[in-house]
Image 1 (cartoon, rainbow, N blue to C red):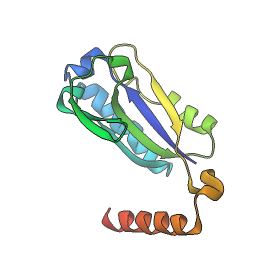
Image 2: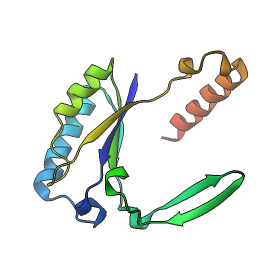
Image 3: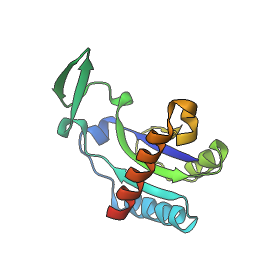
Length: 141
């Protein structure tokens, strides 16, 4: 199973305050642990929302809203994508994580959908397409 570990933003991360050397070193060690265990698939920090945008889908219309976005607690400051045997294992990995911000925050854990989760709605043609696209993506990595 794949899980996305979502690091929630704080006022400091949204203000563009970067982590200090100690936190960068701790996160580097944590990432190294994830890699050595063979669970890390991806992981990155994100720039503040003021440097981003949202595309809203309303009916058939699309509109762009430029950042910053007001609700800091709803925003993402970074993420990891890991491979784990269960939600409990993913939780155990997060509990080993260094505190990602100087202020109180949390990391949300969400399971990523797999092809088999979609049942018969994912037709053989759509499965083939998904497998082909995954293979092409991995070739470019």
